[in-house]
Amino acid sequence: MTLETALAWSIGRSLVVTTLALPMSLVVWRLISANQQSGRIHSLLAIAALLPLFVPDLLTGFTYRMTSARLIHSELATEVLYAVLLLFRIFALQVAARMILPSSTVSAEALYSWKLVQDRSASWWFSWLRLHVQGSLRTPLIAWIGGALFCFQEFETGALLQIDRHPITWSVWLFDAHAAGEPLSRSLMFVSEATVFQIVLLLPIILLLPRRGLQISKGTGSVLAAKGGPAVLTSAACILFAAFGTFIIWPLLSNGIGALSGLRALTGHGNVTQRIQLFLTGRSDLVLRSYQIVSSVVPATIASAAALQLAIGIRSFGRQWLTVLTVVPGLCGSLVVSLTLLAVFQLSWLNAVYDSWLPMIVASTLLMLPRALLLVVLLEVLSPPTSIHSAGLLRAGGGTAAVHGRNLIWQLVRVRWLISTVVLAHWCLWDVAVASTLRPVRFEPIVVRLYNEMHYGRTETLAAITLLALVIPAGLICIVAIMWKQLPQRDS
Image (cartoon, rainbow, N blue to C red; front, side, top):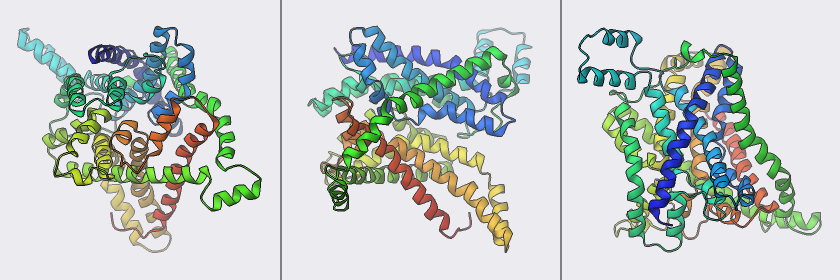
């Protein structure tokens, strides 16, 4: 099979799946908007809709690998399984786009006024189309393009589902070819072919960006979006339940019991005394894997913090060309970024740091920069300077007012920045392409070990290590949150 064949399959799948996801995201968004007045229900629905974006692709592929193995005699069934898994992820991405972006930047009055113009020449139709693209069609178009990019770049799930040769994806084809010894120059040539399609999709997004930079409106839930009969709301609830079952319930049911049993195996063999001795001396697999997970969290956290700081600097500079220049590499996907930086760090003047954490951190930073920029803009909306200033005035007072002020600063500033860093670090930690391509020789990130072992079947020990890779970072987050809350607060 050639790269051109894999590209054709990937492009076709991307266009079909992102188109099918568009009406799904619309009905779910209407359900969320319809409950906007009920804060708790609105938040729960939003979390349920966005949850598929935070489940690692590797875990999804691991869960449904056995299902794919049973479908080995039906290429169509394998492709449908992969498309359905992508469909739920892409619909979640499109819901996020609808929730964040303004529903329209062109008023209904402007559209009505343009219809009153009598001259229906070619320029009139062009301006009419431009008004609609900048207006009511802007958010759906960006959501559609973003879904197509996401589907085209997906790698981990497709790699684990590919028991024979289906599902066919260009990313798995290129990754396997490079791992099998394909020269870097030829791999980069293959990357350039795949990048053409991504650039074609990125150009409309760049043109649709506001002239004064990225802005997010708090009033995204319009009255029109909130409209929807019982059939629409029921369909949205069914979609949410199906996505939750696919990405949360079934993975827990199929892997949960095995993971708990595998934890016992990781502690070693023998009686309780021998197991405790192995644990205290650091010779049990549980300690070794935990250390590997913590070591993997460190570069991921550094990259996420760097991406957030760069995003803040880009926002402060306020130049659209700089925003476009910095986010395009990350929007091209992890495989494109990792192979490109692999060539860059082999240059003579950078070769000294080739076998270090730096290439992996730089790649993760570039990959997370578009998402970090979006999070920074979102934080600017959710935490307006006036609210932070008022909390600071309370903190400056004495007694109970100062306590309330510190709690407000914690809720308005520190918690939200911590969550943003954690979300980006989570995505960095579970990215296989960057970790496997740019990791130092003497360091094996946990996601690389999991990726390699998940190809050989499902074991209780492997499920336990996967569980640890999810739980240990969560425990570290709680520890950091407690320590950060105790630190003295500076003026914000």
